[in-house]
Length: 486
Image (cartoon, rainbow, N blue to C red; front, top):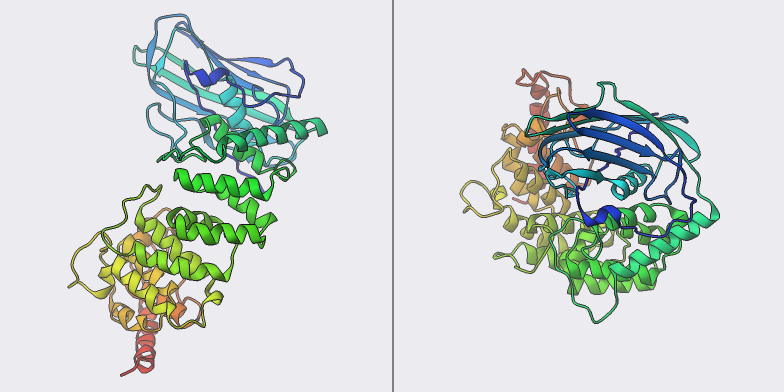
């Protein structure tokens, strides 16, 4: 089976981070191989790659652009490095940005759109990002790749590699004992920066990076280091919780990587349980985001999360700083509770509390006569699909009466039909199938309709499978009518 890995190299022209170092290298400085990528109109691009590199290296890969003419505004830049590994597998993803000035989806774009005169280097950026992308590649094997690059300036100058790219190769080396010790020290330095201790206020941010207290490269580096168990073993439970607490205070991006570390190493540690019990009360919005990605669990969390869901469903929504909108936080609270349904299935007071919160957030589920609100979603829309799914997660039998009218609604589920995350070329689900699946979950049964198992069909129909589904939906309608109190 092939392994598909994205390799991301970002070019920072003239930035101070281009020469910064995250930690001291223990590996010996190795002479690099130089590859001329392209040369034209006073422009020249060179790649320098160490023949032997490892995760400990920060400057093992460098792309240098030499502009012997006047500064130029970059109108377009493309960079791809498809690679193959000696032991099997490949990397073929687009790397860098397809066009400068368009933010990277992960928020990693800090590229300036002017190419200055002289030499512009990507030394540290390329090495750190490449090491992050190669973190799961088996070590001590040869990697062969081709650099394909196009750089267009508004003055008409162009720098372009051959269409097949320029071949490069290097060995992704195993780490020595000294290397691991160095990487552990790097990790501890970064952890100290993320969580500087008491007495310092939060750095409230909307940044999607791991921590606003780290530079872009440090954010990438700490994720790389934490995903190597031999490096992450140096982290203590107190350090991990301190980082998570600071993340919550800063309202930064959820610390999925630290949460997985906590779950894997200290899932039932009393300090972890006490921490999240307090966080759900004092920093609920951020705490539920952490628990959504990976949750150390205790039954004592249930009431706090139910209360959080109820609070999020009340308008006007709280104006406290947060990384994510109320709809995301509300969905995470309901989903975390559903994952741990066994913790509250015997408490008959919780399902109706949750279902009422969902109906307040998604009033369209009550029918077209309800007043419009930020949670309103027409049947067939993505928000309607989300609302129906969350209603099922409440496990409230009374909600079958709310869902019953939708069993005859044949509006096509537009999200399922057009979303890239859903199957293409199959019979699409309709509102009635979404309602049927929700009722089945409330009844404690498996979903009836799986969009991935639907029959192949052309977009736009015809969909003969709907005829059979209609029969099943009518049968479910009769069953629900028998179950509901008169």
